[in-house]
Length: 82
Image 1 (cartoon, helix red, strand yellow):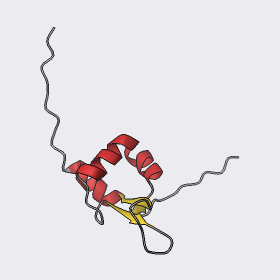
Image 2 (cartoon, one colour):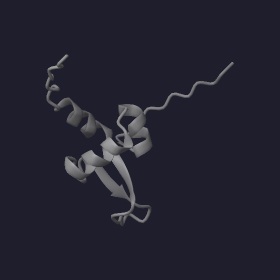
Image 3 (cartoon, helix red, strand yellow):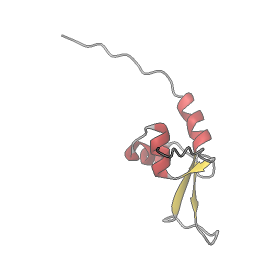
């Protein structure tokens, strides 16, 4: 018999887990972080000594990112010419 492990992610998740939960690519996450997301709301730098630097690990607020996805406008349909 196989053991099944079910995990409930917390509010703040790593980039790898965010990619698994949302199906976003690494490039899409990076672009959104640099362009649209606010540090402290959608993401934050974290460090064990509680003094993060710009190159510290990044954690993502999955609830705020889900809200950001929900606010997206519908895609504009394009005409396909034959």
